[in-house]
Amino acid sequence: MILALPAPVVVLLIGVAGSGKTTLAHALAEQDPAAAVLSFDDCRAELAGDAGDQSVTPAAVDLTHARLAERCAQHVSTVLDATSVRAEHRRVVLDLAAEHDVPVVAVVVDTPLETALARQLDRPATRQVPVEVVRAQHADLLASLSGLHTEGYAAVHLLRHPVEVPFF
Image 1 (cartoon, rainbow, N blue to C red):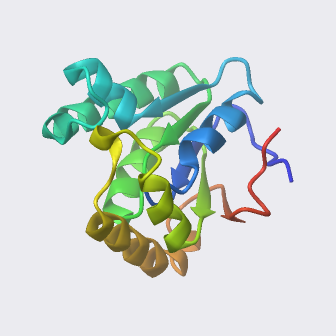
Image 2 (cartoon, rainbow, N blue to C red):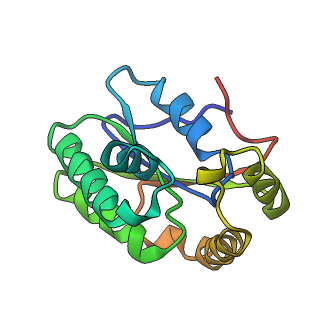
């Protein structure tokens, strides 16, 4: 399955830590040579030298959002690699894109909780997300699914892991 995406577009990935969002983000960005992936992890690494340094998360979020606003103003496609499991976090992205008339497509990466938890063990120690955090993200994701279609996306795609996740 290959996703048909408008250009420009903001692709908002939604999924728990360890769901495969980063791999998918880069595969989706390859569809458009002008597209870029923005992530809180990359901004944390830039700001603190460590993608897992949660102490700089507020600054990393601000930096990511500023870069997203710049890209929307330039009308170039962007894939946002963040958990985005809470509506208030997604609303910020929708509002930034709307300021520049750039559509947002939501892509839910619905990986089984046990798979996402197991993947934490494969990460470097500083990048492992605690079990209780992944469980809370999963609960937030499940609570969000039924209302996603009302939030204002140009489209919502639900990709169930591992069969439907498109790798090109």
